[in-house]
Image 1 (cartoon, protein in one colour):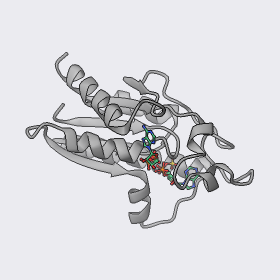
Image 2 (cartoon, rainbow, N blue to C red):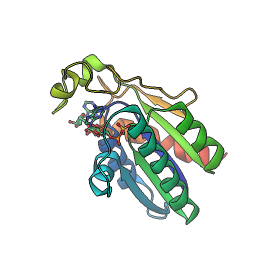
Image 3 (cartoon, protein in one colour):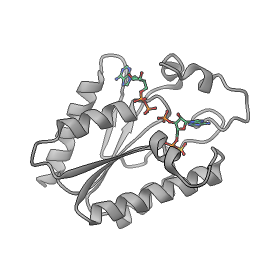
Image 4 (cartoon, protein in one colour):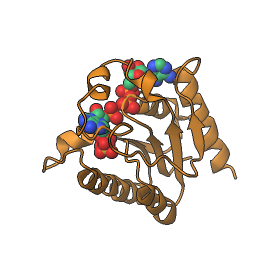
Length: 172
Ligand SMILES: Nc1ncnc2c1ncn2[C@@H]1O[C@H](COP(=O)(O)OS(=O)(=O)O)[C@@H](OP(=O)(O)O)[C@H]1O
Ligand SMILES: Nc1ncnc2c1ncn2[C@@H]1O[C@H](COP(=O)(O)OP(=O)(O)O)[C@@H](O)[C@H]1O
């Protein structure tokens, strides 16, 4: 895969940033011009502060989708690692972005709340809009790959699966 959008989604702490970085670093030397769009980093550079209510998250997810589409059209391989769990955004990507691939890093909340720095988020009081708790997560309906990213699945193994899937799809 040399050009297009590879979107890694999942709840906070599912391993999106970790696996996305490994995927980028694991691309073949002639694997195109990768760009990593990471949710945490993108929120930091926005000119306006957006929150975690559904409306703001949906606006942001559509912004990511359009930005990724634009960069892919300029020849980049865009790796997105954001939550963005909205069916309408997933459908927009499929309909508008050639070479769109979607990976769902599926990890139960019980496991996530044990991970580094995520216990506060998953133990937040009701009304905190935590995706997967009190804010609905619209998990992908037809992802290209689902990885249960916990237990025996290490981040390296997950990245290998993503790269194998992307290579397979590129040759179809
Ligand atoms: N309430 C709540 N719910 C979910 N996530 C929260 C929340 N508050 C802060 N954060 C942090 O924001 C990161 C998610 O931003 P994204 O732009 O990737 O996604 S989304 O807008 O929430 O769909 C997310 O980053 P990741 O942990 O890397 O997924 C969190 O660190
Ligand atoms: N397969 C895995 N098994 C166990 N821990 C993992 C796995 N993948 C990632 N992690 C860990 O989970 C934590 C959250 O990872 P991160 O990439 O920041 O997730 P996200 O970007 O989805 O919020 C990190 O401490 C990371 O090392």
